[in-house]
Image (cartoon, rainbow, N blue to C red; front, side):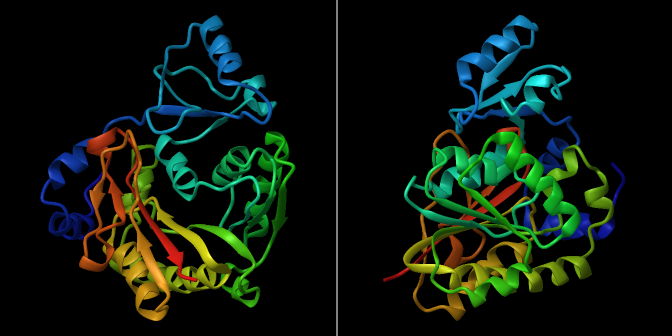
Length: 297
């Protein structure tokens, strides 16, 4: 991992423990999987791992999540059949925080490649209505494949600009916006994320994220809940985006985010204290940011 001076200067101001943060980013990332209970069970997948002498341990915050403690090839026939999904352990958290009910109407606004869509379908027990949207034609193909492979039969896939979804107001009980971002959290498996990081790119992404979060919020019914998440670190892509929504929408209320089993840090601004940052040095995960917002009735 090379040195990006602009990245370093920014993140030293952001994090007093910058050196620990960077040390964690330089460590190999732990592999993890999520058991797909729409097709399989934890017992079946654990039995498969044991037969193949693959060490594993349970992810504390996800009952169906397993850390794989080896370099075992995970793209097996069982994976292709949809018995489990290869997914970063922190990526499992936004769906858990959204906590969809089987009767809910749910929108995953930026859904590809389908990690969270398939998790949401699993949490809903394939009931209710789950709309998975993706703007990119190339990425929507991966989304459709993963939805089919998972057996997620309550999912409808759409290909629209996420900003344009505000044309369909008050349609959903819950919305997940895992927004396009500068991907600093992926640096443990993709060091190029830091090489590509510039303040100019962060500002452009922040402008897009502000438009997307407004669109996502407008899709909620009164009383509905929005979860906004990114796998990145900049305040401009996280707290500033949430503050933008809170300032624009007077009926928006930020809720506490509680994730048993995860060490979290509070949001960086007074208005966003109830949101959380998940740090790689605290949980041996990606960096993640999560905010939970309710539209008051």
